[in-house]
Amino acid sequence: MRPQFHLPLITQPEATSFSLIENAIQFSLHQGAGLIASLSAARRHGQEAVETYSEDDEFQADRFDREVAAQLVRHLRERAERVCLDIRLVPMDSEAMSATMRLAELARAYDVTIVENTELARPIIEGCFFDSGRPLLLLPSEDFYGRIDNIAIAWDGSATVARALSHSYPMIQSATKATVIRVRDAAIWSDDLLDRYVEALEHSGIDVNVAAVHSDGEDTTTMIQDTAMEVHADLLIAGAYGHSKIREALVGGVTRGLLDDLRIPTLLSH
Image (cartoon, rainbow, N blue to C red; front, top):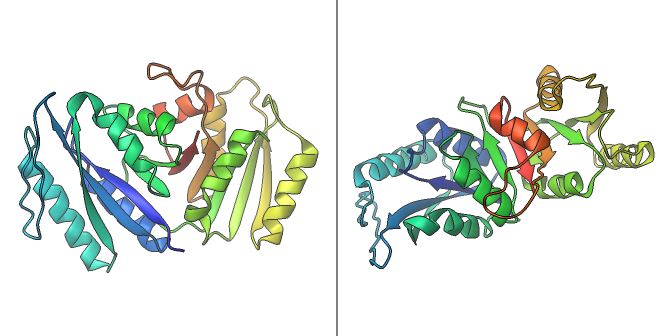
């Protein structure tokens, strides 16, 4: 079964970066995944929008920045064709006030949604985080090679991190090494459960290392990312938490720290 990755292409409030397009292509290529790009067009309440696209990148939509959209589509097609990656374009029509919700709904159809961690993209990130039921691959604004051989896991023994690990499978099938990062003063942890998980990873053919870290008053998120980068992890896997599922809720703890200062590709699952 071939994984299907989802890349939202947007023009407002800021355009999808060429760097994110390149990273999405590389991650999809190295994981043997198909890449589906959703092309978002917002319309005023009560107005109809007609949206078409062709091989000539002709794109029509009310209040849609056609020039920027055409540039994004052209860049995506050119880069994907260069590496022989299978891509598909899926138009997404919605009213401006419901565009984020519509995108979260669309994300439910695919294995992973790939988003760049920027301040203006926060509504999209949090919308997919709370409402898609699917994992997010959250990327800093740099170029990444895309291959996932060495993973880091932020472990606290909770059901949330277990769900994140299950959701991460389409991204980590090629991994051969893993570092399980255990924060010693985390609220939830069990030596027996950790031992069982490490054993399961080892039996799956992964070389596993456990890094037990002590916060000693330091920022937990910083420690987790520092450890992941010290072991040269290609991807950090973390369970994502929120104080509430209502739209206005702020995500908390490690999740908020990652959103505020993301330095490594991270797979988040709520």
